[in-house]
Image (cartoon, rainbow, N blue to C red; front, side, top):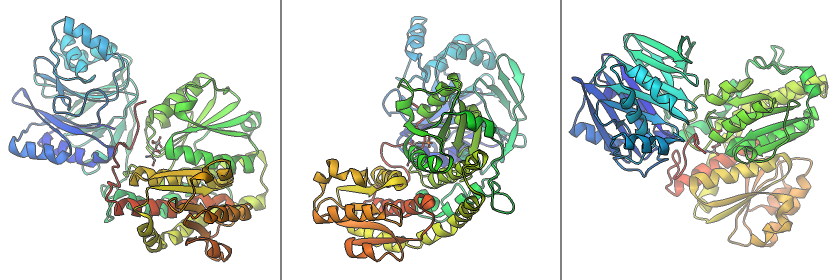
Length: 608
Ligand code: AGP
């Protein structure tokens, strides 16, 4: 969603802010702007469209000052246009704000402010904050912000500067991420760590309700009317990690990072003998696990597919009934969860609004909660009772890849940990599965070597208008995930289906215009999948099959084969998703689509 960057120090803040906003382009946006304080007045430049338009604006009409804020906007209230682009000012033009999130009661506030004589220039909810601060401003912008936010309901990551107080940068956060980065005689703020990695390493992740006064040489954080301390975290990501590292797109880089990110995610969570799981940092005991009646997994999109896969793994290894739900459905259904339910929330960004809302509902019901996130300090990771991080580094491509296999890795560790605690797995079986887990990075590397073969197949199919992805059992969620990848980055309509369901209707779709991708690796239901391939082939479909290298059976039936290494069936989803990620990537590039920032999508859906 939107991006925020701010700076106060001795550099020209406009330059620092622009560089930071460039690192946030992946978040999706439709306009951008920067405001600085120069000789006790606010200078603002805003442009619609890509950042390069703002750059041209700044080159034509340069601004400079040591205290500034900037923003990339993803429209929620008011169309994408210059008037609606942030920053927004009050009537005097001396107070300027940038904001992420949604002010739920902005209409009533705006009405009241207009009745008090305020003149609005935009359709945005954000502008009401500027005028509210003006209303309460009595030569102390920090106090004015505190008073203004008392009237606001909703989510905000907010940055405010005031021309009459050039030494102060005020920020506040509620349900929208905001970080402060410490420099030497300078300080930075941003909605996302990756904006500032070229400048700083020491970050403070603000908490809900934090309101901060930032000067170039001090940071004061207030919450609930008193000053509070927040820990500083050293973030070791280097700027290159957040760059493309030589790949054409972030997505391709992140697909190729998976052997490393899977390893990074389970490393340190296995015993030194490499045969048992050590899940530190979560408070989920054997007694608790014996007491619970079920596990409930809640997520959205690709993370939901990870949850669907985990259902098979958890039920098979721990024998605990496991349900999986889409967060936006869960939060409005009459669900049955209580203190005997362990609720697991999966979210790469840790900021997905529906998943966060579902987390809060689960906590109200007294359920113990466990989050699986990729972003340290994200809202979901901090509000859950327990959190296990995927160690994937920043995932920049909107289409999730390494975060997905990272989530699966954590879910395997959880299943093995729980099964050990519940004694539902033998020592030998545990050691065997841990060995397969260790082998995953090598096997994923082998899959990646199929890239050229996959690219050739993609060339055959990149002009198709539709696709069906078929699989069974714990690879059925991988069919859903493969279809989602193709949909979201190539805009081809693709549907994932349980292969056994085809006869109940969808087989009517099959003819020579409907290509079929089938996951047909060795499994207990391999023969069933074979018959599904024959059914589709008999109706004229071209078949692409994901198969194990030594599979001769399929060779006779599939038109195209993508070979993947064998593994224990329970880990096959991690292997089988790799060719589907690459296939979608190549089809998308051949169709000239914007792989990293597909149309209509944002990296993190922080609004309902
Ligand atoms: C994945 O490719 C999509 N971009 C999207 O479905 C994503 O998985 C979903 O929005 C959930 O995001 P989260 O994991 O950050 O909560």
